[in-house]
Image 1 (cartoon, helix red, strand yellow):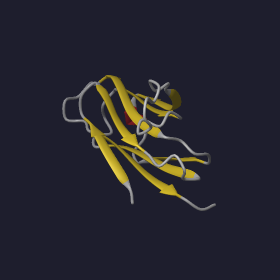
Image 2 (cartoon, one colour):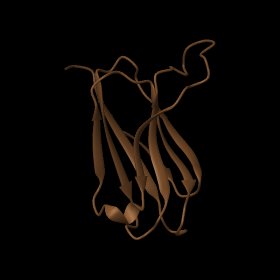
Image 3 (cartoon, one colour):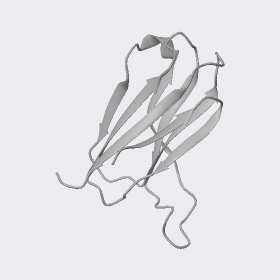
Length: 109
């Protein structure tokens, strides 16, 4: 089942994934292609559902600045297990822009 989060202000939006899944396909899209914003897709290997789980360490999967550079959704495929993925924005220009991050995981190769 696909999971989706959206972000329309600065901050983060996180999806907790199944860390047993073998691969994850991620799609980043923007509602407006004419805005200039700083949006990053980050992932973590720490499973937040574990008892006494450590604080997540986030690694950059991709960075997109000047979102007007893409007119369609940007897909990524992660071929190894990850526990969390998030959309992180430090700058939003254009109040009507909504960024959406969708994930779909495969449990078989």
